Structure formats: C-alpha cells, structure tokens
Length: 395
Image 1 (cartoon, rainbow, N blue to C red):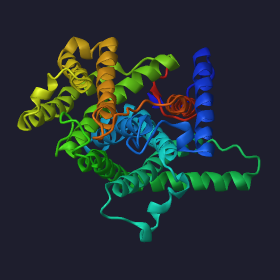
Image 2 (cartoon, helix red, strand yellow; image 1 turned 180 degrees about the horizontal axis):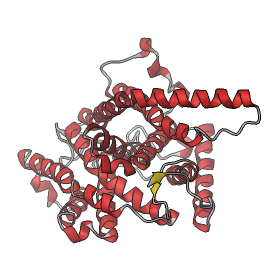
Image 3 (tube, rainbow, N blue to C red; image 1 turned 45 degrees about the vertical axis):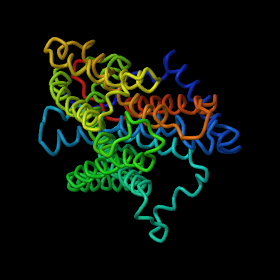
C-alpha cells in the first residue's frame, strides 16, 4: 500500500454543482470587499460578529483539529498504523486553516491591515485576539511546511525536462528538500501540536470578556478548557468523517480497520468533554436554565445530545466495525462542535438593552457556502494530483 495520485476525473455532475456554488460565493465575497461590511452583512454595533466568525472561523478552526491530533498520535506516540490517515488529515487541516484566514479577511473591517501582527512594534500582549492571530499565522506556516514533503514526493524522480542540466539541478533541489524536511519534521510536529493547543483554547478565552452578554449556559470561567477539549474531541471524528466521504467520492475502499481502531479513542475524548460540561453546569448551578423553555435551553439540549449519542454508539463494537455506524457517529460529533460554536457566538450572545436580533444576510450565507465548496474543490484537486490517499495496489 502506498500513497499516490488518483486516476479519476476532476469534474463530475456533483462537482459542477459545488463549483457553481463556489462561484456564487466568490461573487458575494468580492461584493463585500468592494462595497464594505455595511452593504454586504447584517452586522451592527450590537452584533459585531455573525456566521463568518461562528462558522467560517470558530467552527473551521475546531474542525481542522484532526491535523494536530492525528500528527500527535502517529508521530509523537508512534502509532504506525495510523500513518495512512495522516496525509489526508494534514491536508484537511491545512485547507481548513487557509480558508479560515480567507473567511476572516471578509469579516475584518480593514482587511488590508491583516499583516500588522507580524510587526513587533504593533504587538499587543494583553490581547487574546493578538495571540490567536499570531498562533494561527505561525501554525499555517507549520502546516504548509509539513505538507511540503508530499509535494516533493510527487515530483522527486519524475522530472522530465529536456535540458539535462536543468533536470539534474531540479532533481538535486528536490532531493535536498526531501532530506531537509525529513530532518525537521519532528520539530514541525511538536510546534503544530503546541500552537494548536494555544489558539484552540484562546478562542474560548474571547468570551470571558462578555459576562453580561453571554447566556449562563455557556458563560463559564473554564471556557478556554472547554474549547480545547471540544477541539480534541472532534479531531478523530473529523478524520473519520472526511476519510469516509473522500472514499465514497473517489470510489475507493475505505480504511475501515484503521478507522474502527481510531474510533475506540473517541468515547474517551468526547467523554472527557461531555463530563467537563456536566461538571461545569453543576458547579455553577446552571441546571435551572436548561429547563427554562427558551431557545437557548433547547439549543443547549440539542448540542449535548449530539455528543451523548455518539458517545454511547461508539462504545459498541458492531458500530465501530460498520461504515454507516462510523459515518453517523462521527458526523454527530462534528455537528455537535459546529452547533457549540454557533451557540456560543450567536445563540448565547445577546447584548443587554437591545431588542434587535441578528440574522445573516444572503451575502453572508453565500460567502460561507462558497468557502466550504471551494475547500472541497481544492481538496479534490490536490488529492487527485498528489500522493495523499493510501490505496491498495489492486485498486
């Protein structure tokens, strides 16, 4: 078994639909860039963030956690059998963070100043957003450096320039890069895990500055811990979810035995997060809010159910050995984290003394859908043309 490019066509009827949605999203994105936030969004001074932060950024960062959790499992803990899922997980993380940044640019009023955190004289050590921005920027560079050996692997030994001198020099450069990245890979892996843990938790820290604006079911001093635990909890389910979807799309056999083994870990990671939420609610004596009959209470119950159901399902061997069981269980955890981010940043957030509510504009929805579709297209293109998916020789 070896990772290699896939011999399948890029465009299919389904891909054309995704491509069309991506074009619509790109048009809405350009409209926002040219005409500003006021024209393209329903954001206000009371509601300064919307679905671009809740879904495109907060959810996107969490769902990209499969990159650092898989790297830690395969490289740091030396679980060799999980190497087959490492490259797809790394690609998902790299594209996830790339499109998070693209989505963030749309939400920034002065997006052309996004480079400011790179200048030491503009640093603000007391700002949580500064720490998040710096970590995301650094981790994105780490992800591209981790992905570079895959590109080198694709072209090493396959250079076909007619000019012999140019061919030899190119091969020499690829050989050097291959050795270089192999030597520093362990540093990149550790840096990626550390940086991910830092900004995953810091996204939860953002909410600590708004105690009067966040519903008691979600406002908690341990919000940074809960955000980190939820990112760890969704890491492996996202890898399984992405792997099964990709296998179905590419018409290849899924690595069921590896995914089933990976699923054994999920009850522990999800269980820790679920237990932390229950203990937190109990200590803060917030259980009465669960039964108050409000939108917030219903959404909290829905969120918790999305974690409780797969937590129970994946303790059963027959579910872990079933492709359908794996897909449904992992999809529930992924949905649970997305709903959690939507709950924290949108449902739970309500400034006092304001009667208005936030509903996303058609442009905000189009940009969000377009970014997701564009990510899928780039994932498909890179997977077809680079050695990312490990398949058996007979396939």
